Image (cartoon, rainbow, N blue to C red; front, side):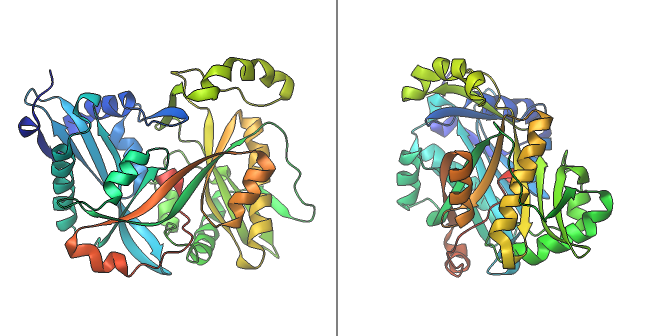
Length: 374
């Protein structure tokens, strides 16, 4: 049964809502050339923990107690103008189809999120991403209508899907190897020193890297590290999150849907990954924790990615995903070399009147969001 907006309650999620949160995530697909649902099996809260040490969810609940929509807010420390800053990330905005298009539903949901933000004065900045394929949402939220938070676009996040269809050549003379537990202090120091140059990159500590919730399923051996003169100068991790976060293909639009069968017939001959059928999860891992010393950042980053790609082939991953900011030369090099599929998302700072000044002070530059934590 579909209820009037006035009968819907917006409130913090309760522990017993967990199955309903998973259901809404599983059943609400994001439109685009490839329609994807971002599932969170087997536990919504376990998946949310990688977004940051603090996580909250708001649910829209009908009079029968059924969850018909949700929105998440997580906080973590990011680099903002080279300064560690606590930032909130707004995500997982979902509504069942019967409730979409209701302006008052969205407005009341944002009011509930604002109340969470006001109760957390240590977090003065909030951000979100919207897929560029979702043009109606960008137009609506970007219009900064009365009663809604202000959305200020500060960049574009490119998610590149790299097929692992052939082994990559790695330049000679580089000392590249899998990470070990004893590397974690140096890894944390490297990530701290190099990521501070990249706006909105995470601030990682050794404790974070060892945290079984923040880095769920990530082992030291999943890192590839570069050494020079006995010290670490670069790193990247191959982070498999499919045990708790799944990207489910719900359908294809246009020519991709029409010719998917032909593409898959040719895949073994071309030695390229097949396109999953609707209802299947995309077998992939994320290239995360990428850092390299500034003097040779681009070539060293490419060598690290190539080595991680070769390791991914042996581990059975068909695809790797990498997040870069628009304007980052790494993105163009990776897309050209790997023939990567690109998904673009608009990056916004979200603020209410009490937070406009903090948002306005942020310098808009090329971001380096860690997509594994989104």
